[in-house]
Length: 236
Length: 107
Image 1: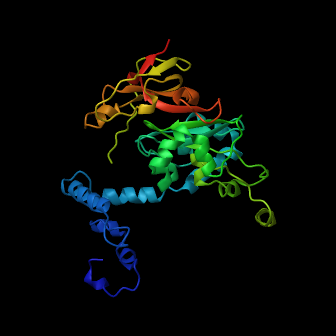
Image 2: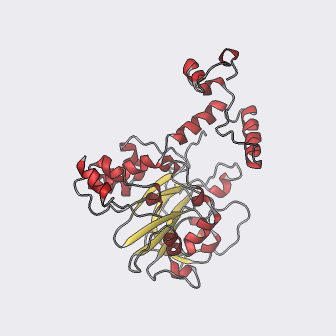
Image 3: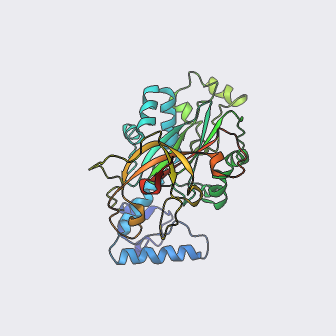
């Protein structure tokens, strides 16, 4: 982008194609360019510049961390859930030692936090929150949705979890225990949702496609498609 | 970025509490960073699990090494014990991770 030879490039990514990864060039490039910077963006830029200038981190390290986060999405968590649904022995390992079970699937959760999987059953429905900040199993699910970080979700989920779940369309019977997990310290929680009825014989990949981000936070139930969608699946 | 990990493997002295023990969260204020939420202070719960030893976040927050490490527990509370007028079901519970120095034995 700073190379005059490329002024007439038609393709946005040609710089990257010609010279390898553009992060190698040093200066950190903005992901968003949709208008004047907000106060937070200015603050972030100031702190980032200082950290780089003082040699605390390099631009390459920041870029690598952005790339790492971009590689983590709810699809990764869905893969883990589907495996647990089809493999009871894996499920036991996942519930007992989430770090080791994820490692079996080639998922490295890093060293900044431990992971814990909590299982939904017909008797217990789990939901995850972080009242103190916004702790989230990012290394498995990626960046959290904005509502997860909102003051409303964080404060109300602990005192009125059934009300919050109802807002998400999850209505639970009174005899189902609602168990809230406040991620107050060094553990990150992920919900293992219940496998939906009507999915007997489905492949792991087909099951993984049903698992939503919210179902792994606990604010949704996984449902199998019915009607035309289900028929399309069986027709495949 | 160069996180050495917050979990401290050893030495591992005996944890003060065991699963099933009734505990009370200390009802004291804290100056500065602290991972014990206000709404749990002074509340009674039961130890559900012992997570192990972790660097003390109250020291890490001020660029200290976070030692001595603290034993971290999963503590389970009845929602009915936390709120004056809980609207959900009687069986509803809440779990939070609390460091040992914030827990007292409950009679």
